[in-house]
Image (cartoon, rainbow, N blue to C red):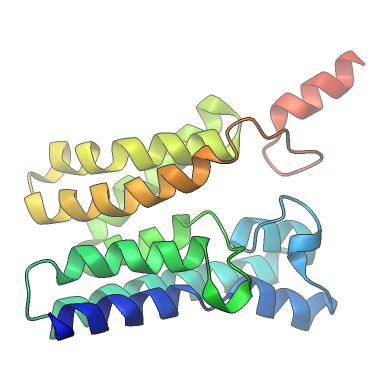
Length: 202
């Protein structure tokens, strides 16, 4: 039990490292959460600080998800360790203790956890995320769709119960986080086609 709690706590703390806030501050000398979507993930970093900063944050957020899951797979002595670590690193990213519990949407950290288990799971999750954004034209709703469907889609393609359960675990956290932004109207943000369309009508 101590091993499980230790790995889960370590995963949460890794997830809580606010790379978007840190990179944004180094680049702009201000908190990126003060503009755009108000989140600290790679997408809002890209919007606020440019492509270079956004890609760097994306890589770092993927890395922390990967590392948390790799540690659980490598050192976990209980079957629940990989699932608890996967959930915890995404929870940490979304509600980080080091940044006032105001984080990102959890997609990159979830992707990193999936990548540590099997790259195919990561590819399937990435495809769902892209499809959700294109079809629903709203990042939070696309993320929620991805969170709900990633586990079943992984199972359909891989028939791997372990990988599908990781997908269900991280997907549940992403879906809960995204649901809080379901009715949000983003203004002037990347992929905000609905808002642009409304602006044209006006």
